[in-house]
Image 1 (cartoon, rainbow, N blue to C red):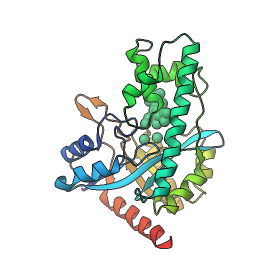
Image 2 (image 1 turned 180 degrees about the vertical axis):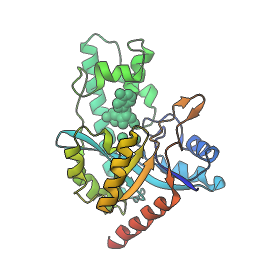
Image 3 (image 1 turned 90 degrees about the vertical axis):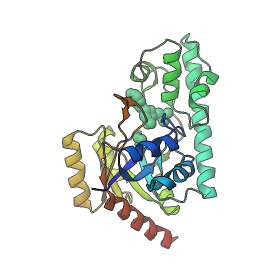
Image 4 (image 1 turned 90 degrees about the horizontal axis):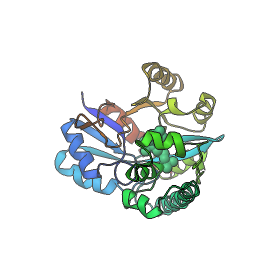
Length: 278
Ligand code: AMP
Ligand code: FE
Ligand code: FE
Ligand code: ZN
């Protein structure tokens, strides 16, 4: 079977593998198609395409857009969107700045709790990548404040915890429309992780093209449920490892959650359809 992993992060957001390293692992895992889907940015796509040449792997340009719907965070994956468009670059620049502003506020909240951390400490970890809470979590580990990233989220960074700060997000509907306007296909990411299934059902009626039924954090029951849902609504069923590059016994989970390469072809066909309509 030709395998496609359609959800992978790189150092351009909160992943720890560079796009080139992602391609090296994709080759080792015998993948024929992968999608680079960093949070709110497509900056890693070009390097990934460059690195894919000698490996004969198809890189799908993608992005994982953080959206909000009825107060809940919903991630929308955009595939085959025009990643070179100025409109996309302007939009992602705004989102990048919103992340920086939000993280400055989180650091201020932590300082008020007598935690000695600066935005420079966080930048040292995020480097040029889109800054996120995982980078703050790692800075807190480095300072000896917490032991694990999960611990940092549970004590300080998750919604409802003392250092949480909201950041600018578009609604799921706006996100889906924006992806379509760039000739891309919109897929709801890890719907099983959205708190309310009422919100998921709402998003499924906003022009979405597909459902990420197979995801590293979905249970077997959730995989079956969303797979059936995709069939019922005639939506594309996708799969992804959501790999952030962390190693388990020396290997990342990249490629461990995959779908048939025909799904990648379906995404391309649908994207071509949207591009023709532009
Ligand atoms: P942000 O993009 O700054 O809002 O941070 C959200 C990202 O943090 C998610 O996309 C995950 O990659 C990561 N994340 C969320 N919750 C946790 C957790 N409990 N432990 C580790 N990483 C998490
Ligand atoms: Fe992430
Ligand atoms: Fe996500
Ligand atoms: Zn992701």
